[in-house]
Image 1: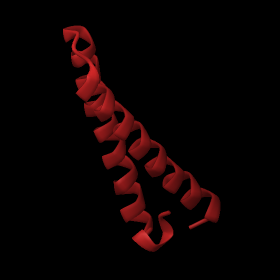
Image 2 (image 1 turned 180 degrees about the horizontal axis):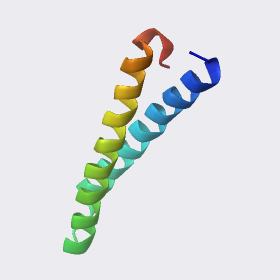
Image 3 (image 1 turned 30 degrees about the horizontal axis):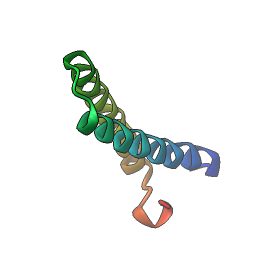
Image 4 (image 1 turned 135 degrees about the vertical axis):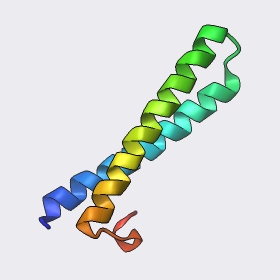
Length: 68
């Protein structure tokens, strides 16, 4: 696998993890029903994207050692 492809996958995983953390923090602080729903949809979407990147990493043989 090319280093650039591996870097894109690892950056994608890092980005999604950070965005998931922020979405969960927002979910825990909002009180408006519409915002709560929005947070839920965002978390579901980000979880799907995270699974996608993990699948790519597994297919390409990327291990935890390559993740920082």
